[in-house]
Amino acid sequence: MNEFIERSELTCPECGYTETLTMPTDLCQWFYECVGCHALLTPLPGDCCVFCSYGSMPCPSIQLQNTGQTKGGCCGVN
Image 1 (cartoon, helix red, strand yellow):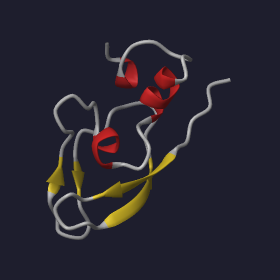
Image 2 (tube, rainbow, N blue to C red):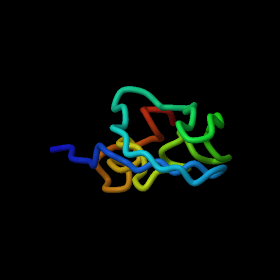
Image 3 (tube, rainbow, N blue to C red):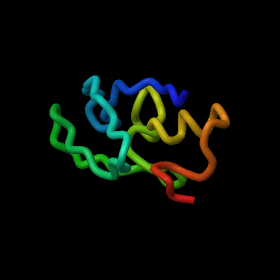
């Protein structure tokens, strides 16, 4: 069974605002607008999505990959 933690606390690197969000399981979230300061967050180099860069948990695809349940990168991208 593929199990993962679906919620992640996203922290804005600009203002420190945090928000707990449900991560999408069928796509990578490349952009996110901070509710606190309206900065547009994008993944850091080498990361596949904003959750992997700024979240308390990596995205579901990376979580499953790290447990050996899937191969490849985030959201099926190799």
